Image 1 (cartoon, rainbow, N blue to C red):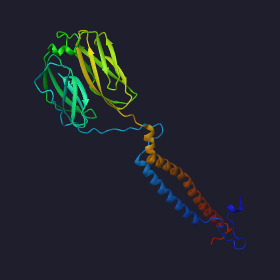
Image 2: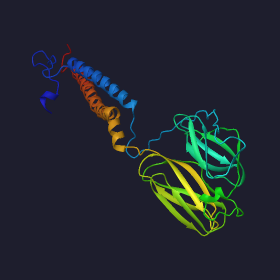
Image 3: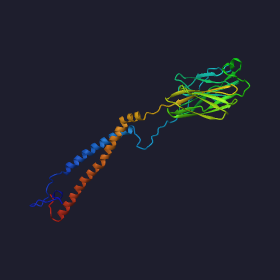
Image 4: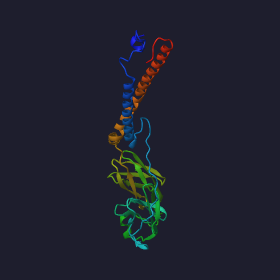
Length: 328
C-alpha cells in the first residue's frame, strides 16, 4: 500500500505524524459551505419551477373549469311582440340577454335557432314561421352549457297571403308543414377539424334540396330523396363565431329556414406556449434538475471524508493497542 495512505509513527518518538496533505477540519468546513450553497440554490430553483410545472415527457396535462352558478338573468323577446300577426316569413326575433352567453330560440318547444349574445347584451335570430300560431321562448346558456331561466312566451301568428308567397316558389298552403331540425349548440371545434352537423327535415314532401351557408363564404348543397337524418361535414380555417344558415325546399315549393351558431375555438400555439413557459417553468425546472443531480456527488464526497476519518480513528486505536504508535 502506498505510504501516503497509511498512518506511520515518528521513528524516534512513535507519535503519529501530522497530516501533510489534508485537514479534516478544513474539509468539514468546505463541505459545509458547499452543502449550504447547494441547498439554497436547489430550493430556489425548485420554487421557480413549481410556479409553472411542465408535464414530463409522455405525460398528459389536464386543465379544467370549475362550474359556477348558471345564468340567473333570463333573455327577453322584444321583437316581435306577443300576439303580433305577420304575413311574411322568415322573421327576425330579437331581444336582450346576458352578455356573451349563447341564446337558443324554441318555437313550439322545437329548437328554432341560436346565436351568441353580443357584448351589448342583445341578440337577433332569423326563424321561419309555420302557418297559424307560433309560440317562441328564448333560453340562455353559459360557456359550460348551463341553462338559465326561460324568457316569457311570445306568440306570433303567421297569416298566409298571396303576398307572403312571393318569396317561395310554387308555395302550396295545403302541403304538410316542414321544419328543419339540428343540434342546438356547436362549440369546442378547432380550425382544421371537421365539424359534422346532423340535419333532419320534419314534414314536407320529398324530394328535398338543402343548402347550408357556413358563415365563412362557403356553402354546401345536398339533394335528398327522403327526410331521413343526414350529416353535413365542414371544416373552418380560422377561429371565430359563425352564423350557419340552413334552407330546405321540398317538391311542393315549401321552404324551411334555420340559423345556428357555430363556435370555433382558437387553435393553441404549442410553440408559443412552450416558449412562454420556458421563461420561468422550463429553465428553472432544468436548473433544479441539474442541481438535484449534484446531490449524489455531494453525498458521496461527505461519505468519503467521514469514512477516511473513521478509518483513521480505527487504525489509531489498533496501532495504539499494539504499542506501535503513541496517541498525542
